[in-house]
Image (cartoon, rainbow over all chains, first blue to last red; front, side, top):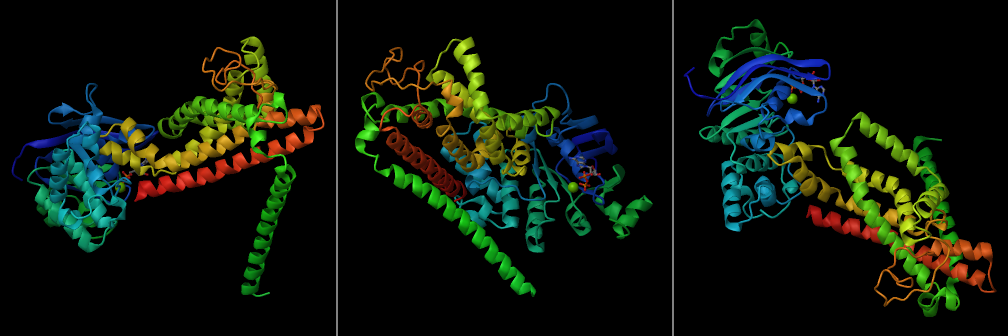
Length: 254
Length: 290
Ligand SMILES: Nc1ncnc2c1ncn2[C@@H]1O[C@H](COP(=O)(O)OP(=O)(O)O)[C@@H](O)[C@H]1O
Ligand SMILES: [Mg+2]
Protein backbone atom coordinates (compact mmCIF):
# COMPACT_ATOMS: atom_id res chain seq x y z
CA UNK A 1 0.00 0.00 0.00
CA UNK A 2 1.23 3.44 -0.91
CA UNK A 3 2.25 5.48 2.11
CA UNK A 4 -0.12 8.33 2.78
CA UNK A 5 -0.76 10.71 5.56
CA UNK A 6 -3.07 9.36 8.27
CA UNK A 7 -6.15 11.28 9.32
CA UNK A 8 -6.93 9.22 12.40
CA UNK A 9 -4.76 6.80 14.33
CA UNK A 10 -5.69 4.59 17.25
CA UNK A 11 -3.32 2.88 19.62
CA UNK A 12 -4.31 0.03 21.92
CA UNK A 13 -7.92 1.20 22.24
CA UNK A 14 -9.88 -0.77 24.81
CA UNK A 15 -13.54 -0.29 25.68
CA UNK A 16 -15.49 -1.65 28.62
CA UNK A 17 -19.21 -1.51 29.27
CA UNK A 18 -19.38 -1.68 33.04
CA UNK A 19 -16.91 -4.39 34.05
CA UNK A 20 -17.14 -6.22 30.75
CA UNK A 21 -14.39 -5.44 28.27
CA UNK A 22 -15.74 -5.50 24.69
CA UNK A 23 -12.75 -4.22 22.77
CA UNK A 24 -9.32 -5.55 23.73
CA UNK A 25 -6.82 -3.11 22.33
CA UNK A 26 -7.14 -2.03 18.70
CA UNK A 27 -4.27 -0.30 16.92
CA UNK A 28 -5.14 0.99 13.49
CA UNK A 29 -4.46 3.97 11.21
CA UNK A 30 -6.98 5.53 8.84
CA UNK A 31 -5.25 7.04 5.80
CA UNK A 32 -6.49 10.36 4.55
CA UNK A 33 -8.84 10.31 1.55
CA UNK A 34 -9.21 6.56 1.66
CA UNK A 35 -12.11 4.32 2.51
CA UNK A 36 -11.50 1.88 5.33
CA UNK A 37 -13.93 -1.00 5.81
CA UNK A 38 -14.40 -2.57 9.25
CA UNK A 39 -15.60 -6.15 8.95
CA UNK A 40 -16.41 -8.96 11.32
CA UNK A 41 -19.27 -11.00 12.68
CA UNK A 42 -22.05 -9.41 14.73
CA UNK A 43 -21.03 -8.43 18.23
CA UNK A 44 -17.29 -8.37 17.48
CA UNK A 45 -17.05 -4.70 18.46
CA UNK A 46 -17.23 -2.82 15.14
CA UNK A 47 -19.81 -0.28 16.32
CA UNK A 48 -18.07 0.04 19.65
CA UNK A 49 -14.81 0.88 17.92
CA UNK A 50 -16.47 3.29 15.48
CA UNK A 51 -18.19 5.17 18.31
CA UNK A 52 -14.80 5.78 19.95
CA UNK A 53 -13.65 7.67 16.90
CA UNK A 54 -16.06 10.58 17.40
CA UNK A 55 -16.56 10.05 21.11
CA UNK A 56 -20.24 9.22 20.81
CA UNK A 57 -19.53 6.45 23.33
CA UNK A 58 -19.51 9.29 25.85
CA UNK A 59 -23.30 9.33 25.67
CA UNK A 60 -23.68 5.78 26.93
CA UNK A 61 -23.72 5.25 30.68
CA UNK A 62 -20.83 3.37 32.26
CA UNK A 63 -18.43 3.21 29.32
CA UNK A 64 -14.65 3.37 29.79
CA UNK A 65 -12.35 3.98 26.87
CA UNK A 66 -8.59 3.65 27.22
CA UNK A 67 -5.70 3.88 24.77
CA UNK A 68 -4.91 6.71 22.39
CA UNK A 69 -6.87 8.12 19.51
CA UNK A 70 -5.26 10.92 17.55
CA UNK A 71 -7.02 13.08 15.04
CA UNK A 72 -4.69 15.43 13.18
CA UNK A 73 -1.95 14.82 15.74
CA UNK A 74 -4.22 15.66 18.64
CA UNK A 75 -5.51 13.28 21.34
CA UNK A 76 -9.30 13.41 21.01
CA UNK A 77 -9.75 12.21 24.59
CA UNK A 78 -7.42 14.94 25.83
CA UNK A 79 -8.59 17.42 28.48
CA UNK A 80 -8.72 20.47 26.23
CA UNK A 81 -10.74 18.94 23.41
CA UNK A 82 -14.04 20.56 22.48
CA UNK A 83 -16.13 17.42 22.00
CA UNK A 84 -19.00 19.22 20.28
CA UNK A 85 -16.67 20.73 17.67
CA UNK A 86 -14.85 17.42 17.29
CA UNK A 87 -18.09 15.71 16.28
CA UNK A 88 -18.63 18.24 13.48
CA UNK A 89 -15.20 17.31 12.12
CA UNK A 90 -15.84 13.59 12.52
CA UNK A 91 -19.46 12.98 11.51
CA UNK A 92 -21.42 9.76 11.79
CA UNK A 93 -24.20 8.06 9.81
CA UNK A 94 -26.11 5.20 11.44
CA UNK A 95 -27.65 1.95 10.28
CA UNK A 96 -31.20 3.21 10.72
CA UNK A 97 -31.64 6.58 9.02
CA UNK A 98 -32.14 9.20 11.73
CA UNK A 99 -33.68 12.31 10.18
CA UNK A 100 -35.29 14.81 12.56
CA UNK A 101 -39.00 15.53 12.19
CA UNK A 102 -38.18 18.69 10.23
CA UNK A 103 -38.18 19.52 6.55
CA UNK A 104 -35.38 18.20 4.34
CA UNK A 105 -33.90 21.69 4.19
CA UNK A 106 -33.92 22.19 7.96
CA UNK A 107 -32.45 18.74 8.52
CA UNK A 108 -29.45 19.50 6.35
CA UNK A 109 -28.78 22.96 7.77
CA UNK A 110 -29.56 22.05 11.39
CA UNK A 111 -26.03 21.81 12.80
CA UNK A 112 -25.07 25.06 11.04
CA UNK A 113 -28.11 26.82 12.45
CA UNK A 114 -27.12 25.72 15.93
CA UNK A 115 -23.72 27.28 15.34
CA UNK A 116 -25.42 30.56 14.57
CA UNK A 117 -25.89 30.56 10.79
CA UNK A 118 -28.56 33.10 9.95
CA UNK A 119 -27.92 34.21 6.42
CA UNK A 120 -30.45 32.86 3.96
CA UNK A 121 -28.31 32.76 0.80
CA UNK A 122 -25.41 31.06 2.50
CA UNK A 123 -27.76 28.48 3.99
CA UNK A 124 -29.32 27.81 0.58
CA UNK A 125 -25.87 27.27 -0.86
CA UNK A 126 -24.79 24.85 1.84
CA UNK A 127 -28.02 22.85 1.55
CA UNK A 128 -27.71 22.54 -2.22
CA UNK A 129 -24.02 21.66 -2.15
CA UNK A 130 -24.47 19.04 0.59
CA UNK A 131 -27.48 17.41 -1.09
CA UNK A 132 -25.59 17.31 -4.41
CA UNK A 133 -22.57 15.70 -2.73
CA UNK A 134 -24.88 13.13 -1.16
CA UNK A 135 -26.32 12.49 -4.66
CA UNK A 136 -29.90 13.23 -3.70
CA UNK A 137 -30.35 16.80 -4.90
CA UNK A 138 -32.21 15.85 -8.09
CA UNK A 139 -34.66 13.70 -6.18
CA UNK A 140 -35.59 16.28 -3.54
CA UNK A 141 -34.91 19.71 -5.04
CA UNK A 142 -38.63 20.31 -5.64
CA UNK A 143 -39.69 19.37 -2.13
CA UNK A 144 -37.00 20.74 0.14
CA UNK A 145 -39.60 22.00 2.57
CA UNK A 146 -41.43 18.72 2.94
CA UNK A 147 -40.81 16.48 5.94
CA UNK A 148 -37.62 14.43 5.65
CA UNK A 149 -39.44 11.57 7.34
CA UNK A 150 -41.73 11.23 4.32
CA UNK A 151 -38.80 10.06 2.15
CA UNK A 152 -37.88 6.43 1.49
CA UNK A 153 -35.24 4.78 3.67
CA UNK A 154 -32.50 5.15 1.05
CA UNK A 155 -33.35 8.79 0.48
CA UNK A 156 -33.44 9.46 4.23
CA UNK A 157 -30.02 7.88 4.55
CA UNK A 158 -28.59 10.22 1.91
CA UNK A 159 -30.26 13.23 3.55
CA UNK A 160 -28.54 12.19 6.80
CA UNK A 161 -25.27 11.99 4.89
CA UNK A 162 -25.95 15.47 3.52
CA UNK A 163 -26.55 16.74 7.08
CA UNK A 164 -23.14 15.42 8.07
CA UNK A 165 -21.52 16.95 4.98
CA UNK A 166 -23.08 20.33 5.73
CA UNK A 167 -20.85 20.53 8.80
CA UNK A 168 -17.77 20.30 6.53
CA UNK A 169 -16.25 17.27 8.27
CA UNK A 170 -12.81 15.76 7.67
CA UNK A 171 -13.87 12.22 8.49
CA UNK A 172 -17.17 10.43 7.86
CA UNK A 173 -18.01 7.36 9.94
CA UNK A 174 -20.75 5.06 8.67
CA UNK A 175 -22.16 2.20 10.72
CA UNK A 176 -23.71 -0.35 8.34
CA UNK A 177 -25.37 2.46 6.38
CA UNK A 178 -26.88 0.17 3.75
CA UNK A 179 -27.95 -2.87 5.72
CA UNK A 180 -31.50 -1.51 6.10
CA UNK A 181 -31.72 -0.64 2.39
CA UNK A 182 -32.58 -2.47 -0.83
CA UNK A 183 -29.79 -3.25 -3.36
CA UNK A 184 -30.53 -0.28 -5.62
CA UNK A 185 -30.49 2.22 -2.76
CA UNK A 186 -27.32 0.55 -1.44
CA UNK A 187 -25.63 0.88 -4.82
CA UNK A 188 -26.43 4.60 -4.87
CA UNK A 189 -24.84 5.07 -1.46
CA UNK A 190 -21.75 3.15 -2.60
CA UNK A 191 -21.34 5.34 -5.69
CA UNK A 192 -21.78 8.39 -3.53
CA UNK A 193 -19.09 7.29 -1.10
CA UNK A 194 -16.62 6.58 -3.90
CA UNK A 195 -17.18 10.11 -5.20
CA UNK A 196 -16.70 11.60 -1.73
CA UNK A 197 -13.41 9.86 -1.08
CA UNK A 198 -11.39 12.56 -2.83
CA UNK A 199 -12.40 15.08 -0.20
CA UNK A 200 -13.00 13.02 2.92
CA UNK A 201 -11.59 10.18 4.95
CA UNK A 202 -14.24 7.50 5.21
CA UNK A 203 -14.67 4.64 7.67
CA UNK A 204 -17.48 2.20 6.96
CA UNK A 205 -18.68 -0.75 8.99
CA UNK A 206 -20.18 -3.37 6.73
CA UNK A 207 -21.42 -6.93 6.84
CA UNK A 208 -21.38 -7.14 3.11
CA UNK A 209 -18.12 -8.58 1.78
CA UNK A 210 -18.80 -7.53 -1.81
CA UNK A 211 -19.45 -4.02 -0.65
CA UNK A 212 -16.17 -3.92 1.25
CA UNK A 213 -14.24 -5.24 -1.74
CA UNK A 214 -15.97 -2.87 -4.16
CA UNK A 215 -15.42 0.39 -2.34
CA UNK A 216 -12.72 0.16 0.29
CA UNK A 217 -8.97 0.74 0.01
CA UNK A 218 -8.15 -0.68 3.39
CA UNK A 219 -9.93 -3.45 5.26
CA UNK A 220 -9.73 -4.33 8.95
CA UNK A 221 -11.09 -7.60 10.29
CA UNK A 222 -12.27 -7.79 13.88
CA UNK A 223 -13.23 -10.86 15.86
CA UNK A 224 -14.38 -11.05 19.49
CA UNK A 225 -13.10 -7.58 20.27
CA UNK A 226 -9.66 -8.12 18.72
CA UNK A 227 -8.26 -6.72 15.53
CA UNK A 228 -7.23 -9.87 13.64
CA UNK A 229 -5.64 -8.16 10.68
CA UNK A 230 -5.73 -5.03 8.59
CA UNK A 231 -4.27 -4.11 5.24
CA UNK A 232 -4.93 -3.18 1.64
CA UNK A 233 -8.34 -4.53 0.70
CA UNK A 234 -7.02 -6.45 -2.33
CA UNK A 235 -4.44 -8.25 -0.22
CA UNK A 236 -6.87 -9.10 2.55
CA UNK A 237 -9.34 -10.58 0.08
CA UNK A 238 -6.78 -12.35 -2.13
CA UNK A 239 -4.40 -13.74 0.45
CA UNK A 240 -5.36 -13.14 4.07
CA UNK A 241 -2.53 -13.81 6.51
CA UNK A 242 -4.72 -15.21 9.28
CA UNK A 243 -6.77 -18.38 9.21
CA UNK A 244 -9.70 -16.64 10.94
CA UNK A 245 -9.90 -13.98 8.22
CA UNK A 246 -9.90 -16.58 5.51
CA UNK A 247 -12.62 -18.56 7.31
CA UNK A 248 -14.74 -15.43 7.60
CA UNK A 249 -14.28 -14.52 3.94
CA UNK A 250 -15.28 -18.04 2.98
CA UNK A 251 -18.48 -17.74 4.96
CA UNK A 252 -17.45 -20.24 7.63
CA UNK A 253 -18.93 -18.05 10.39
CA UNK A 254 -20.58 -14.68 10.97
CA UNK B 1 -68.78 -22.57 21.02
CA UNK B 2 -66.55 -22.23 18.00
CA UNK B 3 -63.80 -19.66 17.75
CA UNK B 4 -65.87 -17.23 15.73
CA UNK B 5 -68.67 -17.27 18.28
CA UNK B 6 -66.25 -16.78 21.18
CA UNK B 7 -64.76 -13.77 19.49
CA UNK B 8 -68.17 -12.30 18.83
CA UNK B 9 -69.24 -12.93 22.40
CA UNK B 10 -66.10 -11.27 23.83
CA UNK B 11 -66.56 -8.26 21.61
CA UNK B 12 -70.20 -7.95 22.64
CA UNK B 13 -69.22 -8.13 26.31
CA UNK B 14 -66.58 -5.43 25.94
CA UNK B 15 -68.96 -3.12 24.10
CA UNK B 16 -71.58 -3.63 26.78
CA UNK B 17 -69.15 -2.77 29.58
CA UNK B 18 -67.83 0.29 27.79
CA UNK B 19 -71.38 1.37 26.98
CA UNK B 20 -72.41 0.97 30.62
CA UNK B 21 -69.48 3.11 31.79
CA UNK B 22 -70.26 5.84 29.29
CA UNK B 23 -73.93 5.76 30.29
CA UNK B 24 -73.04 6.03 33.99
CA UNK B 25 -70.81 9.05 33.38
CA UNK B 26 -73.45 10.65 31.19
CA UNK B 27 -76.15 10.12 33.81
CA UNK B 28 -73.91 11.42 36.58
CA UNK B 29 -72.87 14.59 34.76
CA UNK B 30 -76.32 15.08 33.25
CA UNK B 31 -77.92 14.87 36.69
CA UNK B 32 -75.57 17.49 38.13
CA UNK B 33 -76.09 19.78 35.14
CA UNK B 34 -79.89 19.53 35.33
CA UNK B 35 -79.85 20.13 39.07
CA UNK B 36 -77.70 23.23 38.88
CA UNK B 37 -78.83 24.65 35.59
CA UNK B 38 -81.57 26.91 37.01
CA UNK B 39 -79.06 28.70 39.24
CA UNK B 40 -76.79 29.68 36.36
CA UNK B 41 -77.29 33.20 35.16
CA UNK B 42 -75.18 36.14 34.11
CA UNK B 43 -75.45 37.66 37.58
CA UNK B 44 -74.43 34.36 39.20
CA UNK B 45 -71.14 34.63 37.34
CA UNK B 46 -70.60 38.36 37.77
CA UNK B 47 -71.56 39.27 41.33
CA UNK B 48 -69.72 38.73 44.60
CA UNK B 49 -70.98 36.22 47.16
CA UNK B 50 -71.08 38.99 49.78
CA UNK B 51 -73.88 40.57 47.73
CA UNK B 52 -75.97 37.43 47.30
CA UNK B 53 -75.60 34.20 45.34
CA UNK B 54 -72.74 35.10 43.02
CA UNK B 55 -69.47 33.27 42.59
CA UNK B 56 -67.53 35.86 40.59
CA UNK B 57 -64.62 36.08 43.01
CA UNK B 58 -64.41 32.31 43.56
CA UNK B 59 -64.24 31.81 39.81
CA UNK B 60 -61.50 34.39 39.50
CA UNK B 61 -59.62 32.95 42.51
CA UNK B 62 -59.69 29.49 40.97
CA UNK B 63 -58.21 30.79 37.71
CA UNK B 64 -55.66 33.00 39.46
CA UNK B 65 -54.46 30.13 41.65
CA UNK B 66 -54.31 27.86 38.63
CA UNK B 67 -52.13 30.28 36.69
CA UNK B 68 -49.78 30.88 39.62
CA UNK B 69 -49.58 27.15 40.28
CA UNK B 70 -48.68 26.40 36.67
CA UNK B 71 -46.10 29.20 36.64
CA UNK B 72 -44.50 27.69 39.73
CA UNK B 73 -44.79 24.03 38.87
CA UNK B 74 -44.11 23.93 35.12
CA UNK B 75 -40.46 25.06 35.17
CA UNK B 76 -39.66 22.77 38.10
CA UNK B 77 -41.46 19.81 36.54
CA UNK B 78 -39.84 20.39 33.15
CA UNK B 79 -36.39 20.67 34.72
CA UNK B 80 -36.89 17.50 36.77
CA UNK B 81 -38.27 15.62 33.79
CA UNK B 82 -35.26 16.58 31.65
CA UNK B 83 -32.88 15.67 34.47
CA UNK B 84 -34.56 12.31 35.06
CA UNK B 85 -35.26 11.16 31.53
CA UNK B 86 -32.26 12.54 29.65
CA UNK B 87 -29.33 13.47 31.85
CA UNK B 88 -29.80 11.07 34.71
CA UNK B 89 -31.26 8.20 32.77
CA UNK B 90 -30.75 4.81 34.45
CA UNK B 91 -28.74 6.42 37.26
CA UNK B 92 -29.32 5.49 40.87
CA UNK B 93 -30.26 9.11 41.61
CA UNK B 94 -33.04 8.96 39.01
CA UNK B 95 -34.37 5.74 40.47
CA UNK B 96 -34.55 7.27 43.95
CA UNK B 97 -36.11 10.48 42.65
CA UNK B 98 -38.72 8.49 40.74
CA UNK B 99 -39.67 6.62 43.88
CA UNK B 100 -40.00 9.89 45.78
CA UNK B 101 -42.19 11.34 43.04
CA UNK B 102 -44.43 8.31 43.09
CA UNK B 103 -44.75 8.51 46.87
CA UNK B 104 -45.57 12.20 46.67
CA UNK B 105 -48.18 11.61 43.98
CA UNK B 106 -50.06 9.16 46.17
CA UNK B 107 -50.08 11.47 49.18
CA UNK B 108 -53.69 12.46 50.07
CA UNK B 109 -54.21 16.11 49.24
CA UNK B 110 -55.55 16.92 52.70
CA UNK B 111 -52.08 16.02 54.04
CA UNK B 112 -50.52 18.48 51.61
CA UNK B 113 -53.07 21.05 52.77
CA UNK B 114 -52.21 20.54 56.44
CA UNK B 115 -48.50 20.56 55.69
CA UNK B 116 -48.99 23.85 53.85
CA UNK B 117 -50.98 25.18 56.79
CA UNK B 118 -48.26 24.34 59.32
CA UNK B 119 -45.33 25.44 57.19
CA UNK B 120 -46.56 28.35 55.09
CA UNK B 121 -49.50 29.78 56.98
CA UNK B 122 -48.15 29.41 60.53
CA UNK B 123 -44.37 29.00 60.43
CA UNK B 124 -43.60 31.40 57.59
CA UNK B 125 -46.56 33.57 58.62
CA UNK B 126 -47.80 33.97 55.05
CA UNK B 127 -51.35 33.52 56.33
CA UNK B 128 -54.35 32.20 54.43
CA UNK B 129 -53.49 33.51 51.02
CA UNK B 130 -53.25 33.04 47.30
CA UNK B 131 -49.51 32.49 47.72
CA UNK B 132 -49.86 29.75 50.37
CA UNK B 133 -52.50 28.10 48.22
CA UNK B 134 -50.39 28.26 45.07
CA UNK B 135 -47.40 26.73 46.84
CA UNK B 136 -49.53 23.94 48.32
CA UNK B 137 -51.04 23.28 44.88
CA UNK B 138 -47.54 23.20 43.42
CA UNK B 139 -46.67 20.36 45.81
CA UNK B 140 -49.92 18.71 44.79
CA UNK B 141 -49.28 19.17 41.06
CA UNK B 142 -45.53 18.54 40.77
CA UNK B 143 -45.48 14.73 40.89
CA UNK B 144 -48.19 14.25 38.28
CA UNK B 145 -46.88 17.00 36.03
CA UNK B 146 -43.30 15.67 36.23
CA UNK B 147 -44.56 12.20 35.40
CA UNK B 148 -46.60 13.33 32.41
CA UNK B 149 -43.79 15.51 31.03
CA UNK B 150 -41.33 12.63 31.50
CA UNK B 151 -43.69 10.34 29.61
CA UNK B 152 -44.00 12.86 26.79
CA UNK B 153 -40.21 13.14 26.55
CA UNK B 154 -39.85 9.36 26.66
CA UNK B 155 -42.00 8.98 23.54
CA UNK B 156 -39.31 10.80 21.52
CA UNK B 157 -37.00 8.16 19.97
CA UNK B 158 -33.61 7.86 21.66
CA UNK B 159 -31.98 8.11 18.24
CA UNK B 160 -32.67 11.86 18.25
CA UNK B 161 -30.03 12.45 20.89
CA UNK B 162 -27.32 10.38 19.20
CA UNK B 163 -28.22 11.87 15.83
CA UNK B 164 -28.02 15.43 17.14
CA UNK B 165 -24.81 14.91 19.02
CA UNK B 166 -23.16 13.09 16.09
CA UNK B 167 -23.82 16.15 13.94
CA UNK B 168 -21.79 18.24 16.35
CA UNK B 169 -24.82 19.79 18.01
CA UNK B 170 -24.57 20.21 21.78
CA UNK B 171 -26.69 18.07 24.04
CA UNK B 172 -28.53 21.14 25.27
CA UNK B 173 -29.43 22.31 21.77
CA UNK B 174 -30.53 18.81 20.82
CA UNK B 175 -32.85 18.82 23.83
CA UNK B 176 -34.27 22.30 23.32
CA UNK B 177 -34.52 22.33 19.52
CA UNK B 178 -35.36 18.72 18.73
CA UNK B 179 -36.52 16.67 21.68
CA UNK B 180 -38.71 19.20 23.52
CA UNK B 181 -40.54 20.43 20.38
CA UNK B 182 -41.24 16.83 19.47
CA UNK B 183 -42.51 16.13 22.98
CA UNK B 184 -44.62 19.31 22.98
CA UNK B 185 -48.02 17.81 22.05
CA UNK B 186 -47.71 15.28 24.87
CA UNK B 187 -46.49 17.91 27.31
CA UNK B 188 -49.37 20.25 26.51
CA UNK B 189 -51.99 17.60 27.11
CA UNK B 190 -50.23 16.68 30.36
CA UNK B 191 -50.27 20.32 31.48
CA UNK B 192 -53.91 20.89 30.62
CA UNK B 193 -55.06 17.65 32.24
CA UNK B 194 -53.16 18.50 35.42
CA UNK B 195 -54.74 21.95 35.23
CA UNK B 196 -58.15 20.26 35.48
CA UNK B 197 -57.05 18.44 38.61
CA UNK B 198 -55.65 21.62 40.17
CA UNK B 199 -58.77 23.57 39.28
CA UNK B 200 -61.03 21.11 41.06
CA UNK B 201 -58.86 20.61 44.14
CA UNK B 202 -60.36 21.57 47.51
CA UNK B 203 -58.64 19.70 50.34
CA UNK B 204 -55.19 21.17 49.71
CA UNK B 205 -56.65 24.68 49.76
CA UNK B 206 -59.03 24.74 52.73
CA UNK B 207 -56.22 25.51 55.19
CA UNK B 208 -53.88 27.34 52.82
CA UNK B 209 -55.78 29.64 50.48
CA UNK B 210 -58.49 29.83 53.10
CA UNK B 211 -62.27 29.74 53.07
CA UNK B 212 -63.15 33.35 52.59
CA UNK B 213 -63.53 35.38 49.44
CA UNK B 214 -63.27 39.09 50.23
CA UNK B 215 -64.99 41.18 47.63
CA UNK B 216 -62.44 42.07 44.98
CA UNK B 217 -61.92 45.26 43.02
CA UNK B 218 -60.96 44.33 39.45
CA UNK B 219 -59.73 47.81 38.67
CA UNK B 220 -57.35 48.05 41.56
CA UNK B 221 -53.98 47.10 40.11
CA UNK B 222 -52.06 47.87 43.28
CA UNK B 223 -51.13 44.41 44.45
CA UNK B 224 -50.54 45.68 48.01
CA UNK B 225 -54.17 46.69 48.54
CA UNK B 226 -56.32 44.20 50.40
CA UNK B 227 -59.11 44.36 47.84
CA UNK B 228 -56.91 44.24 44.73
CA UNK B 229 -57.71 41.20 42.60
CA UNK B 230 -53.98 40.64 42.08
CA UNK B 231 -52.94 40.77 45.75
CA UNK B 232 -51.17 37.44 46.38
CA UNK B 233 -51.41 37.75 50.18
CA UNK B 234 -55.18 37.94 50.49
CA UNK B 235 -57.29 34.88 51.30
CA UNK B 236 -58.82 33.27 48.26
CA UNK B 237 -61.66 30.81 48.39
CA UNK B 238 -61.98 28.83 45.15
CA UNK B 239 -65.00 27.21 43.49
CA UNK B 240 -64.24 23.78 44.92
CA UNK B 241 -63.70 25.14 48.42
CA UNK B 242 -66.87 27.20 48.05
CA UNK B 243 -68.89 24.06 47.32
CA UNK B 244 -67.41 22.37 50.38
CA UNK B 245 -68.01 25.39 52.63
CA UNK B 246 -71.55 26.09 51.49
CA UNK B 247 -72.45 22.46 52.09
CA UNK B 248 -70.83 22.13 55.50
CA UNK B 249 -72.07 25.42 56.85
CA UNK B 250 -75.41 25.26 55.04
CA UNK B 251 -75.87 29.00 55.34
CA UNK B 252 -79.16 30.51 54.28
CA UNK B 253 -81.97 29.19 52.15
CA UNK B 254 -79.92 29.50 48.98
CA UNK B 255 -77.07 27.23 50.05
CA UNK B 256 -78.26 24.30 47.95
CA UNK B 257 -78.83 26.36 44.83
CA UNK B 258 -75.41 28.02 45.15
CA UNK B 259 -73.61 24.75 45.59
CA UNK B 260 -75.38 23.09 42.66
CA UNK B 261 -74.73 26.05 40.39
CA UNK B 262 -71.07 26.13 41.41
CA UNK B 263 -70.76 22.43 40.65
CA UNK B 264 -72.02 23.05 37.12
CA UNK B 265 -69.46 25.80 36.52
CA UNK B 266 -66.67 23.64 37.92
CA UNK B 267 -67.59 20.64 35.79
CA UNK B 268 -67.98 22.69 32.62
CA UNK B 269 -64.62 24.37 33.11
CA UNK B 270 -62.86 21.05 33.68
CA UNK B 271 -64.56 19.52 30.64
CA UNK B 272 -63.38 22.53 28.66
CA UNK B 273 -59.81 21.90 29.84
CA UNK B 274 -60.02 18.33 28.61
CA UNK B 275 -61.35 19.31 25.20
CA UNK B 276 -58.72 22.02 24.95
CA UNK B 277 -55.98 19.51 25.75
CA UNK B 278 -57.07 17.22 22.94
CA UNK B 279 -57.44 20.02 20.43
CA UNK B 280 -54.12 21.64 21.25
CA UNK B 281 -52.10 18.47 21.11
CA UNK B 282 -53.73 17.40 17.82
CA UNK B 283 -53.01 20.78 16.25
CA UNK B 284 -49.41 20.75 17.41
CA UNK B 285 -48.90 17.21 16.22
CA UNK B 286 -50.13 18.18 12.77
CA UNK B 287 -47.93 21.24 12.73
CA UNK B 288 -44.78 19.34 13.60
CA UNK B 289 -45.17 16.47 11.17
CA UNK B 290 -46.41 18.23 8.05
N1 LIG C 1 -24.38 0.08 25.03
C1 LIG C 1 -23.85 -1.12 25.35
N2 LIG C 1 -23.90 -1.56 26.63
C2 LIG C 1 -23.38 -2.76 26.96
N3 LIG C 1 -22.79 -3.59 26.11
C3 LIG C 1 -22.70 -3.22 24.82
C4 LIG C 1 -23.22 -1.97 24.37
N4 LIG C 1 -23.00 -1.85 23.04
C5 LIG C 1 -22.35 -2.99 22.68
N5 LIG C 1 -22.16 -3.81 23.74
C6 LIG C 1 -21.49 -5.13 23.71
O1 LIG C 1 -20.23 -4.98 23.13
C7 LIG C 1 -19.97 -6.02 22.21
C8 LIG C 1 -19.69 -5.43 20.84
O2 LIG C 1 -20.88 -4.86 20.33
P1 LIG C 1 -20.93 -3.98 19.02
O3 LIG C 1 -19.83 -3.01 19.06
O4 LIG C 1 -22.30 -3.46 18.89
O5 LIG C 1 -20.66 -5.08 17.89
P2 LIG C 1 -20.90 -5.02 16.32
O6 LIG C 1 -21.19 -3.60 15.93
O7 LIG C 1 -19.64 -5.54 15.75
O8 LIG C 1 -22.04 -5.93 16.02
C9 LIG C 1 -21.17 -6.94 22.24
O9 LIG C 1 -20.87 -8.02 23.08
C10 LIG C 1 -22.26 -6.10 22.83
O10 LIG C 1 -23.13 -6.90 23.58
MG1 LIG D 1 -22.97 -2.78 15.09
